[in-house]
Image 1 (cartoon, protein in one colour):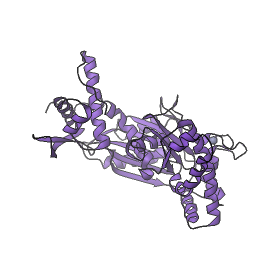
Image 2: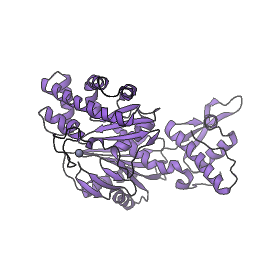
Image 3: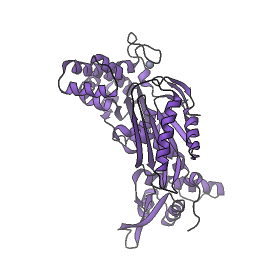
Image 4: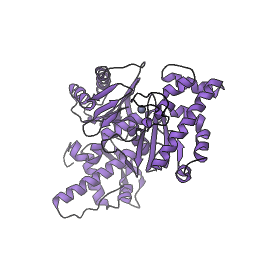
Length: 409
Ligand SMILES: [Zn+2]
């Protein structure tokens, strides 16, 4: 935890130190759960009275509650346990996919308090249609919140190139949207429901990486790639503990790197992009099937049962998977690669094939360092990443964003 000892002389400097310390404490209990004042004192290196003053401020803002813990701090009174008030402070998270929409009310501390899941056939749904579902789900989730509770904001994940400066979905090839002002539109939807909360939107793989790094299979590593495959393929990258966004926010589009120039035409207009060889359509074509998301699971199940054509299809994907992953590992030198989306099902079948291919060619040091794992958060990495995106402003400046709720108790 990064805390700063008070001692700066200027008033502005003291405010910044206080904000940074409040941020460090709230972020810690948000990610790690209930923590005693004694533990926070040890973790931050701040003294007990400073920690007490800071946690009292967070308590007065109704962001945490403090109660005696069972553990005793030395010979004295039991140290107070600082717990995030998840039912009192929440965000709305949305994961918008090509054929699904997940929505959730997530409390401070990261717990999903309520959720709605919609699955539907593939189709070119217009923005207005998606916004209609967002409105309905948001209305239901808000109605279920505890009276007097507070919404810190909304977070949205989408399989698109998202311009970070203003949340414009520049290009969503598999949703067939271009320059969709999704962030502004969803903020309008929430305002129409009486919720004047900031909304932020990011690429789905970037948010999967964020959540897995914080709470899932990437915990404990600062060099993480979250790879997701559905209709499209993309990567979210954590480098040295921070998201690697690129200049405009468009990094990680590994699905649109060309691996087979004589291959199939991609939705982006290029020929032979990696996602044309390892995406959902590639595996269904190789298996001689057509259909939607459930069909990939059917191919995997048939391959497990020994069906020849399905085994060959999975093996075909494994070969192309090794090529793209080899490129990714050579460029980024990750410690952990998390196989999300459809790769959750396929990767266990091709793991040995991919590792063997990586081990028999290419520069070996980065290939020997990397570990491949499945997501710790299952199918919810992206949804929970959207929640973390929405919590970020509050965690950066707890009292500035929340404001004092009741003074000086
Ligand atoms: Zn492409």
